Length: 217
Image 1 (cartoon, rainbow, N blue to C red):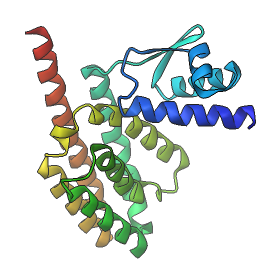
Image 2 (image 1 turned 180 degrees about the horizontal axis):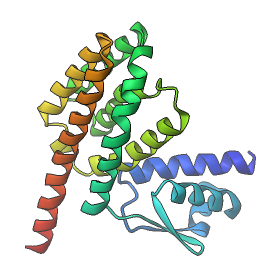
Image 3 (image 1 turned 135 degrees about the vertical axis):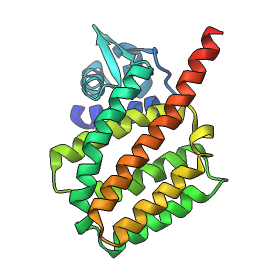
């Protein structure tokens, strides 16, 4: 295996573990420890950690990387950015969504409706549902920004899936977005996406604030 492919593998697996909470905020990741765990040299580990740092998932401190914390201020900024960019990408993309895309979105919506699915599956289905639209925007930098912001906000979602998964109004909003995409109404889909992001932000923020109060009580 080349060093480049090893770095990509380590970055992908660490990204998934950090996003899902398996590696908790504040965890220190030493190059030596990660290299031993994944059976690679320190060079691909260094490159992988640098990639994760560029995505905002870790902070580099010499030969160690620390998983970035989850904070109310960080959440606020992430959602402000998403609400500014994602509706634009949606508006540009809707005319390019065909029947196959609508069919896939419909199946993903049904998956999220299933109360028996594992929490991680819900998050993955949710991300895939929205990606069926914005990835067709034809704006590579914008798409990359949306995907990075989604990865960062998904970290928060994983910590309280019991709250998000039971927020029925989010599924109602998904249905409205799907209806607008199916009707090729780009303006409506963009506005519905903005409203959906604001709703998601409110759900996550309420959880974080309540958690903060419990910690200080």
